[in-house]
View 1 (cartoon, rainbow over the protein chains, first blue to last red):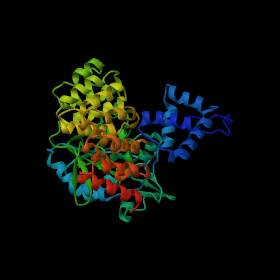
View 2: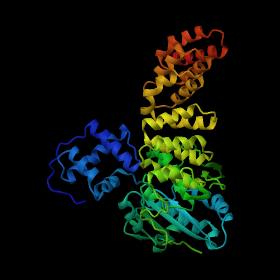
View 3: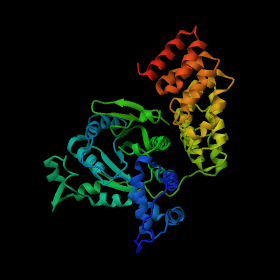
View 4: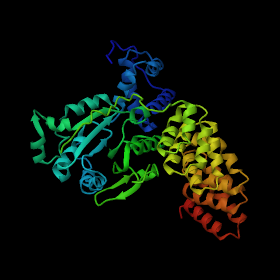
Length: 288
Length: 207
């Protein structure tokens, strides 16, 4: 959304009532919940958007946000409010678990000609799905026998564009082995450009996990990575996410969460699987 | 073999489902033989006012845990008096698994459960009063300690008081000191109450 000239809202503050009103609305629309410790973070971004859209007050901005037919401002604000901090091979013990423990079980249920489907959500700037692709190429002999489909989704459209572009800082690739760096990246100035082969390996899509209409087409996945997202959700949104993943998985499919997250505290839909490298969660093979 | 993209799968969010999502049809789909259809019906009923009755009716008979879980999530999200009333009805079920699932669901509704907590704690059925104490275990509400103190001061049933004193030993402040002493006198012949109340007293006093 374009910026408007001189701010009529200089000196603006967000009252506690405004914060609560916004918090409830944003939660309903995105499933993302802000507690009072995030007040400064939220207020700062709200004021930035009130000023940028030329509104004179929170009230008029909120009305615009709620009733704008295109939903453009809500998407813009969502992009601002979401955190996109990640790097290549983060929590890579789960990728080891994927190739050593999960995929051998998954392919046992497959027949010749089937493909494997992996869903990474949130995509953020693409480090996770591309790490999965690299890890499969480097450490999973099955890549020679099976087609693999990697889909990666995020609510933030700007970050999806960055993911598709595949250009990363030195910090982002700091844990990538030197051989992989040479093989899959090209250094351009201070940045690293991911090869087009790998960029083509991942399909990026925009998804709001809190919207049934968005998630409904996502079916028959073998593995879902959803790491360090549910920590931003409240209890009910976490349950909804667990149920969404349940519908998105094939019977026997797996969910991998972040190291500080536990499905057992969220839902009883999954069986806990303790593999040598990681604890993951499995939809029953008998599930209907 | 390689990485592939299935272009046939469309991710545009457009609704292409074969069955009607009309509220009346969704309610009847809750009775479908296929559990996946029942789960989706339960999920989509979130957009239907007055869906709680049909959901609770199905919940009481539903044998598939995943379907029950989705029904409970929708009842939580419906956030209306009828949904809450349905959950309370299920607390009286003979099905222990269902009761436990409902207790977990009600813990997620602090704002809605608070106004009815007094009546739950005064229920004629001591089991329901114990379940109410179980709900308090992780209900995020400022009055939890006051409700528990009320239980140990007034409830005539030893098992209800035992449940409350267990929880008080985790959450109590100095406010609970005298009520705990009085609880010990009221049930002076009950070894478990003596033990649990003493433990709570020691924790409050920092012994």
